[in-house]
Image 1 (cartoon, rainbow, N blue to C red):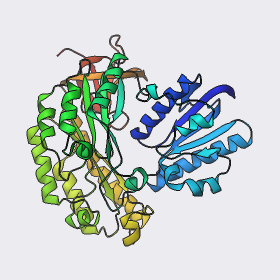
Image 2 (image 1 turned 30 degrees about the horizontal axis):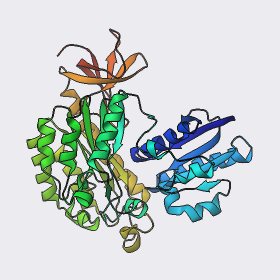
Image 3 (image 1 turned 180 degrees about the vertical axis):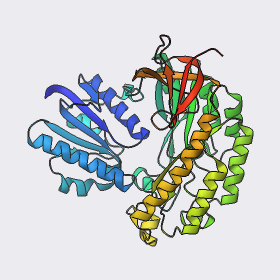
Image 4 (image 1 turned 120 degrees about the horizontal axis):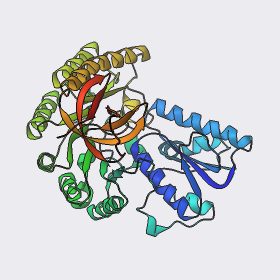
Length: 433
């Protein structure tokens, strides 16, 4: 157990990761040595940043807290702190359940952790982070909270109403990261497309993306977590015309059946969804769409699921994930619907849906064989250089396995000729445009 060393463990989404990076910077400014998600924890202080979105995430977070609670009992850890979404939502219950934790913090009051350790919060460093990602890319959280009222989602209960950051503040952060060598930026929010409405009284994601794209040194911008209802169409012109805005959009649709969309309170119909997707593909040629679908929401019939399967086959999303519904306390569906789909049926439907998507993804990859694509090299691994195209976000999307025919540098772009496919990934070798 090393004195003045902190181990920070982040669970959940990239929005949580940004919070951990902000906290890490404050720790280093106060003279601490900090490690993130270390394979072997050796610090006297452990901070766990939790997720509380769905049942499996809550279970993972609780198990992690219990693990380090035992480590504290055996004096392998001196101080144990917990922050994040699970802690925000269940603070009182967790305090009773796991008394080994020195203190629980919520989603937004983690700054108190520093003062509880007798250390100051450095306001002048409020926008600075210690990156946990490779040095060439970073996540930019443009907003907190969510104003949508989807039936199943606990996020608004945890994070509160939508709060956009100002464009000037975001631009300053991007410029600072560019000066540190970051080239690729993932713009993230619970609802990216709502950005700006609260502070500018109009949708501002198109203007924000345009302004960031004009910053010298920004090579790639990728957009995550758009909402389909009231989609800001002016964003498509920016995506089409700005070369450094990736032809990629993460837009969670959740379902296709009109009956389920109504139950989910998504404020959009199947026909409107299809029309939106057709417009996006027409206005931004070559765009790759990532979506997320939910199976097993209360009331989902075999016919509803068949509709969703047909929808996936029809729309042919280049990237797709799926997850089973879980009843979350306080949500609309928890209060008013019965969780009437057995777990085994949920899992069967999810497996079937992903089997459909696997074939689509394979065909999408096969269509790239013979093309030469711009690839960002992330790392070296298992005899290959591992990279990504503009159509691939870190962690969640396929990668390009590049033959080691010549030396390349991580964090740089290279033209790669695609020579084949391997499951979801592409195979390639350095070529020329």
